[in-house]
Amino acid sequence: MRFAYRGRNSKGGLEEGTLDASSEAVAAGELQRRGIIPLSVTVHEEDEGKSEDILQKIPLFRPKVTLDDLIVFCRQMYALTKAGIPIIRIIRGLGETSRSPALTEALDDVADRLETGSTMATAMQANSHVFSDLFVAMIHVGENTGELDDAFHRLSLILELERETKRRIKQATRYPVFVIVALTAALVIINFFVIPQFTTTFQRLGADLPFLTQVLIFTSDFMLNYWHALLVGVVGALYGFRAWIKTEKGRLQWDRRKLRLPVMGPILEKIALSRFARNFANTLTAGMPVTSALTVVADANDNAWIGHHVQEMRHAIERGDSLLRAARNSEMFTPLILQMISVGEETGAVDEMLINVADFYDEEVDYSLNRLSESIEPILLVGVAILVLILALGVFLPIWDLGSAAIG
Image 1 (tube, one colour):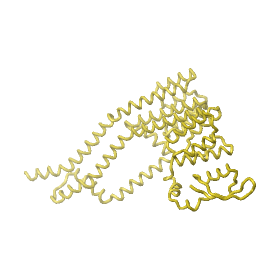
Image 2 (cartoon, one colour):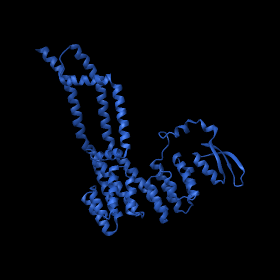
Image 3 (cartoon, helix red, strand yellow):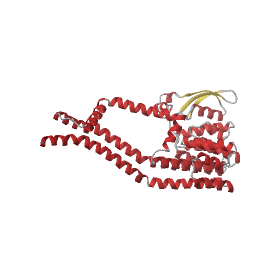
Image 4 (cartoon, helix red, strand yellow):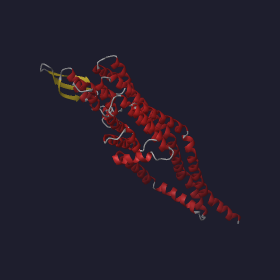
């Protein structure tokens, strides 16, 4: 995107011109880097009307940084910082070569802040829409310990595991979602196209209809006559549900109920606990204090209910409890996991034991996912059988009654 600028150079002279940047803030930072004090920075006339830029101002259409982008960025930062290349030069170079416009904009802003004397953690925290609290905390520890390259290496591993976790969640929910969508589509087709044909036939014959058939006809007529109201109701319910889970109380209750779902709940719980244990181990290994690590890990957990328990563990430790007692009181972990945490506290290797805990949960998740179809198929068969039975009785009972009456 091109910007027109007016500014004063180091000698006080007026300078005008244009430059390419991802935003006005980035353009102003580039001018300061050149020794020009910006007086005004505006979008160039050629770019003012571009629909692409207008769409990018809308949050829905704004490009986002993916996990893959961040993983590549962390790997590159690890290799380049380890080679001893200056940080600002690295950030500028990666910003220019990144394929993600959103990441390029964030890196340009980080580089501008670094040039003004900010720390990297502070500069990244100002771009919280790209860099999470866990990301910033790991960078903060790396800066303070002089092991920034190691921090980026750990972050690349954490993000890779997060990508694997999301893949597992999609894998776990894909089959149930497909089944629910398929059954919903079947019900809609039956009520809109199949039952009306039988209704016309039954009305023509003028026979008394069984109660089950009357229910099917009433349902079909209601959907045909009030489909627009149903559509508005469904959209409104979805919108209200999304608004509810965005609230702190709503998200906490919803995440708690997700863990209690039949079949799927235990799998989602194991995935969340595996993520907690591995992130907690990585933050401890990086040198972060236990209470600070628990705070960061709680905020980084996608499940608010698990995060709530982690925060309670932190409060318990601040009151003087041991990690083992806090973990036991949270009622999140099995006796085997508590035993491993106990061994970790006694040997001073809690991080290693937590890695073993995460590996244990990963194995359990793999086993549960492999058996997921076996667990869901009976539920699916029962649901389909009930649906077919209702339709069969509702459609064929009147035909049998008519046939019996004709024979009699």
